[in-house]
Image (cartoon, one colour):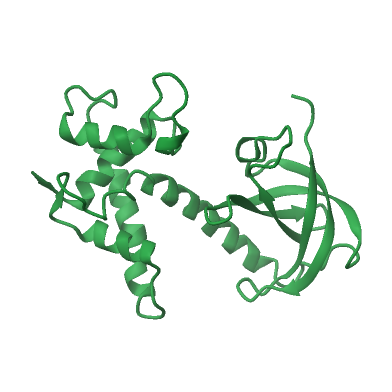
Length: 234
């Protein structure tokens, strides 16, 4: 049986809802009875009656339609620049009419993560809009080549798969933008993906590595490294 891109995305949305609106990879399923999103997705498609996810709702299909509409924008981007391999797979997926669970269809593996990718992209778009409003007001923070403490609000948190790190953008108390990378596997008492959340206050110290105008947002940005995050006792 062949499926359309819309159908498999709707199932992925239902799985995402069942998982508590998060994406669990197959190698992260070390807890008892925990399954990854992709495994649950394939089960839901092959045998919906025995799937723990339950029936697919009209709301799931409505969300799938929003995801398809959002990523259709990649087609327009393709007119301006070359798409990455991942972006090409997304565009192929949302247009698909012949997805088959048998064999090795390279469009399928990305489906399980698509609701999470969509959710994160929307959050990043909100921050991108806010960044544009800061072009005339954001200034460099602190003194270059010195170590300093910063306090602000987490405005962007993006996982960088290639380096297993998070890229954070902080809007400081002074209304300035400070960014840093943070290794997700550092040997510290911090669950970086869960302890540092969008919209939450944050205090950290870091070495001011550079101060430049972003070629993307056109804002003045301060970039720090060797970061130490101060987390209150849990």
